[in-house]
Amino acid sequence: MMKKLKTSKNRKEVNDLKKFLSIAFVFFLFTCRYSFSAHPLITDDTGTQGRGHLQIEINSEFEYDENLWTKGIDTIFSYGFTDNGDIILTFPYLSTSDAQGLSDISIEFKYRFFEKDGLSFALKPGISFPTGDETKELGAGKATYSIYFIGTKENKNSIIHFNFGYIRNQNVNDEKENIYHLSIACEFPLSEKLRFVSDLCGETNPDKSTGTPILFSIIGFIYSPKENFDIALGIKIGLNKVSPDFSILPGITIRF
Image 1 (cartoon, helix red, strand yellow):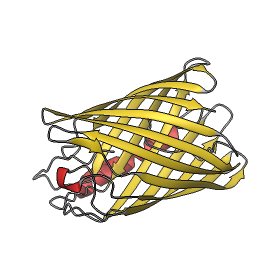
Image 2 (cartoon, one colour; image 1 turned 60 degrees about the vertical axis):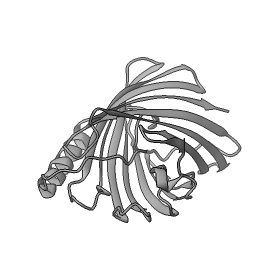
Image 3 (cartoon, one colour; image 1 turned 135 degrees about the vertical axis):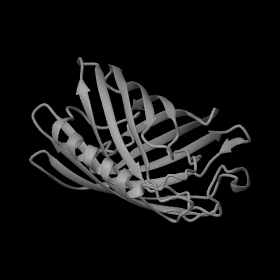
Image 4 (cartoon, one colour; image 1 turned 90 degrees about the vertical axis):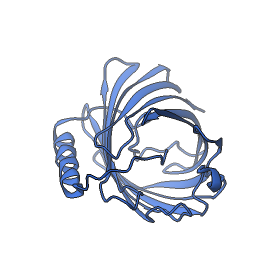
């Protein structure tokens, strides 16, 4: 969501990547129970809204890095155009110490193409449009493209989600144009209405001055006082020097 990153002289990118993959593998094998992924998680799930159903999310991120706060709000509309296909429209608003305003609007399509014995797969291609003011670092200045492969495995009392993505980060900000994303997430039921959630993510650093990937984890809670209404709160923590220090992630979700 936010591209403000630190630079670092530490270039141990291979060790950082190996560390992330090792943690991810252990995390994948020994954790993860319950439900579909949702804010504050980054990792998506293969679940869709169903034909004719609408979901509205208002998700915020308050990021702290190098003694500065950056604030963002995403308003996301997901509509089920088929039982296993969604169209997703995101309107991001960004506020930094130097500027504030609308960032780059995006549209995505999620299609679940396989589902059997608790295992399902989906693809989610997307495009973002240069609606943010790139001179104020509110946007990329060019259209960007992405595609994500999404996997979900359901067991009797557990669910795990896996994402692998590619982003064609065309931009005027002298950033890398080829960005890769890897993440896994899970949820633990604490009661019928409350879930503990966790996420582990790694992504190519768009900063050309370093090859060290961005690594972060998320922990949080989702409270569902009603079947079609969720309240979420999470914390995102940077796992290496090039990642932002931490973020606070509140959000609400309403389904119709």
